Length: 288
Image 1: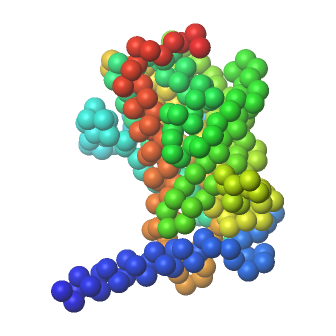
Image 2: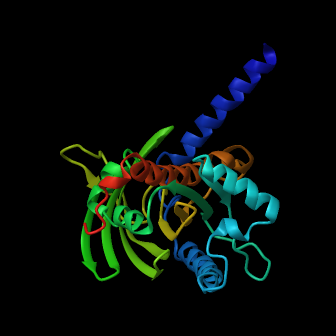
């Protein structure tokens, strides 16, 4: 009994400390600094330099197709069973870790298989931004298409996350799509504005200034790929995001908790995409 009680106590302590990380900190403690932005921008540049060649024809299009044979077979077996296959990534600079002062860069990649869905049906759903609040509820509370010209979109999303504490974020993003052929497409999304919302849903709700908040999310860039094959469509998403850092000395305890949030968010997004298409794929009108 004593061992079990100790384990429970450690878990409770972890949650308390994780909560203390996210509550309002002393002035300036969670302020987004230019050095932090510069490190993130550098990380993104190097990541995109790796992504661009992968989009060339003749190169395996999906991340799972570049895995070693044993892992690849296991991943495809999980995908056929309806699971999301996800893994943590890290972009290195000449073999070295890219340090982000006062910030944490989170890099994940995940894939899901949507049986029976065509590429056109899948794109119609993900481009239906006014209905993202339905498809991706509760993580997306509100959604709106702000502008659309050709393959370029500007969108608004209100994110909601409750884990120890509740966070509500008003965000805007620019998204560009490229359809390579009848069975392949990809897109890139970059956040252009992220504001934490105080007293969300209340008459006096207000936005905190960008970068002067609790640091739940300061940047999020996503890189999507879509491939129709095997009687359905594979959807892959690579997510690179920036949050505030962990107080010194608490990384061993809080680190796994902080890492779990972007992982869970990506897993949910891919799973919700699959669910929206699997349930009633015939109702998706590709002309919408």
